[in-house]
Image (cartoon, rainbow, N blue to C red; front, side, top):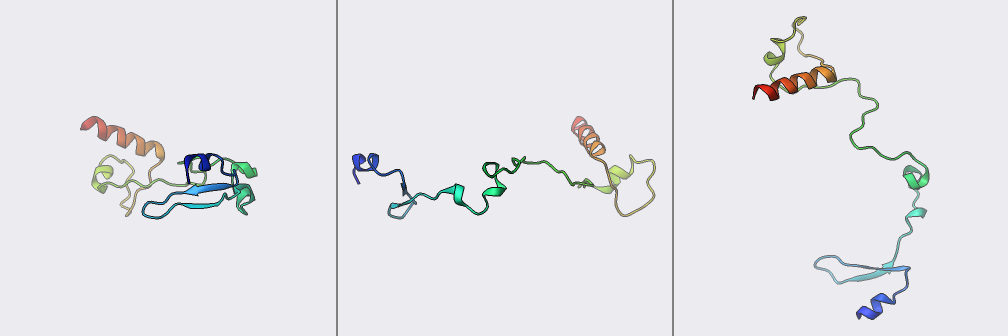
Length: 99
């Protein structure tokens, strides 16, 4: 197609370019007719917020246990330690200051 033909092309069509393949002229897909539209903002759903945790009930600290155990006063000898978000942030801040 010449540039003029592309410019005058009907808006219902799109040109698809895929590396290593010949260009394809095809009808555009109307995303407003997708069956999952109700899951999007356009369909009335709430916007997705990346990194938000509404149902989190615990945090996991990945470090050597002796580093944390030495700082805990109520350590009972369990095989795990459950830290709050604040405790994790405090440990992370302290570790950053010591380096």
